Image (cartoon, rainbow, N blue to C red; front, side, top):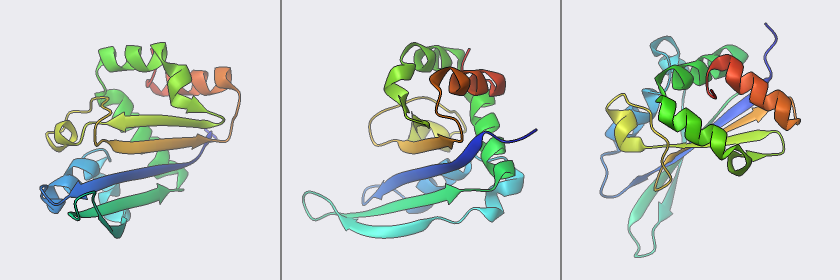
Length: 146
């Protein structure tokens, strides 16, 4: 099957109050186990509003096999209520050929995937398609949308 995904960007923050290894574990939980060793995050050190240290992590996944497996893993673990919410507000999550998803870090650490907006794991799925209906069909095929 030819992939309709160009790449996936993942980014997230580890705040001074968070255990950096636990935050990384939360994000690694999004991936099927066989790909975890092939993912390496770049990190930047930032300062928060009050001078507190923040580490910004990001990775771009360009390998079709890993990108599709990541999306399938998220799709199969995202609760139906979140898929319905994503579907109902799809216009807020799509921009051009990109789908934006935000997941809860704490829940991901526990192995649960939930949509969340405050201090999330940010996921941008860049499709080779730009037509909203085509993107919707791809998302429904992988189970991300009902």
